[in-house]
Length: 320
Ligand code: PBG
Image (cartoon, rainbow, N blue to C red; front, side, top):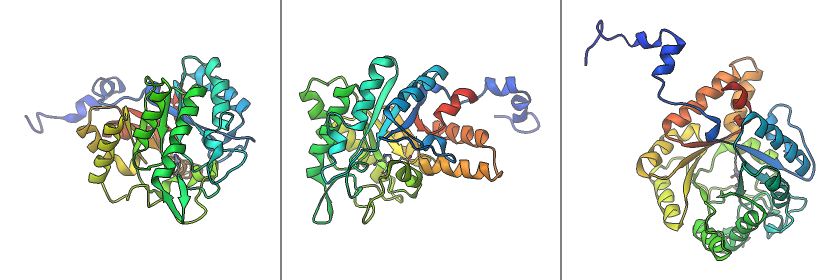
């Protein structure tokens, strides 16, 4: 290879057209999933509009708009009327997510309807599994998690995404789906989900902060990457169709490692705290939201993510 002055990398940076020709990473709405929070009562969030709660009707209206601007996929989270020890609201036939799915499915046949499968929004204690003697009981949680996934699919979900981090949940969900003839429904496993401080705004929106302790006995230690690959491998063995890394920006190395180790689709969740940091800085006048968001999302794609769950998905429609 030649070097300066023969080589001048600025030559291809001179105009927008030239830069476009050599751009290695692209953002397309095809690869984005918009999270939505369905609740019995609407609650608008001024500072973080994408974290607003919507009623079932409000969700239908919002999705109408999303589809109109070109969004292709949404992931639903539910805030139930009541919470209990068994997370009844997560798996009952007329739960809030199930009702939203039944309203959306016939109205938007081409939209990808994803659901987050977890118990934390629905348990009285806010943990992602069943509590026995003060601990999150792994195996007793599996049945409820699998039941939740089945009820979502029965109501019209295209993809289920378990985010609880119990061991064996992917296998339990796969078996339960297959038993009911849902062998064609893919599982997007939150495979490497870290015990992160960046979920703060989500827990506020979803009302899912744990009432005691924290999630470190089931979500991953932020210090580990080899363990993340083991999580990915185990989820694939259990039948996961795609893997998710979460959060995204502080874990770009994990996204890259998973990309290199596995040939399945890799998703990344650009979480609520990542969105909130940029929004807050933009409100303070310290950075430009659109530029910072586009740069963040491009970096996540460059690290190796095929698809991204992002609160900027709706904004992207006008930015791209
Ligand atoms: C449910 C769940 C959480 C998020 C997605 N699914 C919260 C948590 O684990 O505490 C976080 C998403 C975000 O912060 O945007 N377990």
